Amino acid sequence: MGEFFDAAFGFPTALFSFSLLVVAGYWTLVLLGGPGVDFLGAGTDADTGAGAGAGDGSAAEDGDGLVAERLAMLGLGGVPATVVLSLLIAIAWFVSLAASALTGGVAPRILGMGAALVLAWLGTRLAVLPLRRVFQDQVAASLRDFVGLPCVIRTGRVGPDFGQAEVTASDGSSAIVQVRQPAMDVPVAGTAADGTGLTAGSTALIFDFDPDGRFFWVMPHDTASDLARRPAH
Image 1 (cartoon, rainbow, N blue to C red):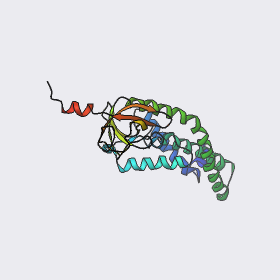
Image 2: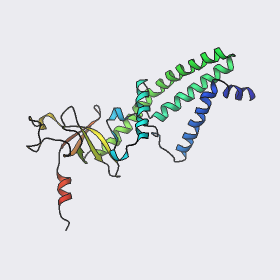
Image 3: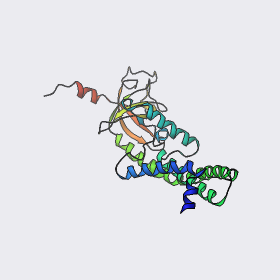
Image 4: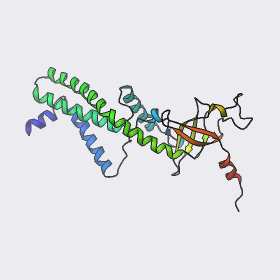
């Protein structure tokens, strides 16, 4: 047992051991009903086109999105960053521990740390492949809840290849989502003069979700505005 602790808290495994303790503490809190799995950003914003609403933005969320973006650049996107980081740390710790137990001296252990990082990346990437489909299916299912809701256009125009809107869910939370308007509904002049063009501030209705493109189809919709102006009886 003493040899185990010497290896676990000796160089370089100690670098991963303390991180592993943080990971263990985090997942303990999750099991007890604490922070959600996407505490560091789900890493799915880039894939789904959905993000936090303007009222929810913060520097911390920007940092979380940056973590997810960096992981995606390493081929580890599409899965919550907390899951990816947990796998990376756990695999790196195990490989580093094995290398420390089998080798002696500073130089071999430094090489073992490098090998631990490489193997952790490879192992995590293999684990992410099946997990990515699971999480993306969950995200797509939750995004379908927006179908049938009104939204407010936040870009200068909406076309078959461009557009963003803010939508408010039934629980009061808001999100910025990617939206598209069918080409046949887009006015040639690109204006809202004929009532079919969608510009910033326009109210639109989400009528469908494209799971492949990860965007919503919208059409002009003034019902929400009319109801807001209608006097109560």
